[in-house]
Image (cartoon, rainbow, N blue to C red; front, side, top):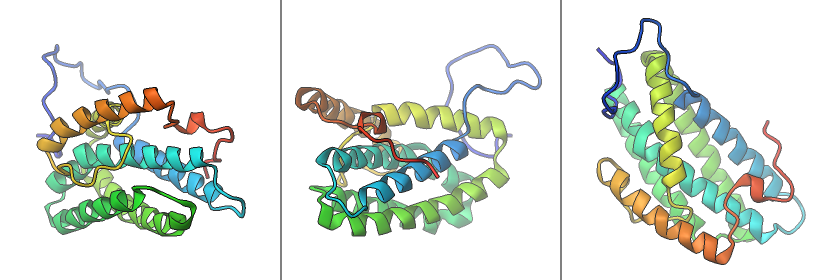
Length: 203
């Protein structure tokens, strides 16, 4: 019996014994993205004025990251670790506050955003560690696959008023993401770390 309830997969032949789905685990993805976000914040918090494109990429990266976590990581933690339900709710509330703070992000707001992101990294990081202890590697990889798909379809702008829990966030977030991506193309808005002239160094 699966320790972590997973979304249904398309019909497929039964996997052979020892089969492992391809891709990184959700724990590895979230850990890597947390390091990248902290590195970007360190880069943007330097003594010089922050380029607008840096603030834009930070906004997009955080919007995608939080959306995907709320669609797959946090529900998996809630299901696998019932005693962590209150902490999951607290992270969802903190995500909404962070998204609200991201609206119209300026240099002056960076210190507040950085502190919120560090609290997010600490809180979610603890939940990921606990999830690792109860989930199988296959479950973590399957969740990682879903997280990556969700992130590609996620909004690139903060929408704190959209649903934050399944099933509605898995319906609404991709729809909102389509609108955001059309605006990104029209306005040539940078949304990925690779769009920056100087890449933040992952610690």
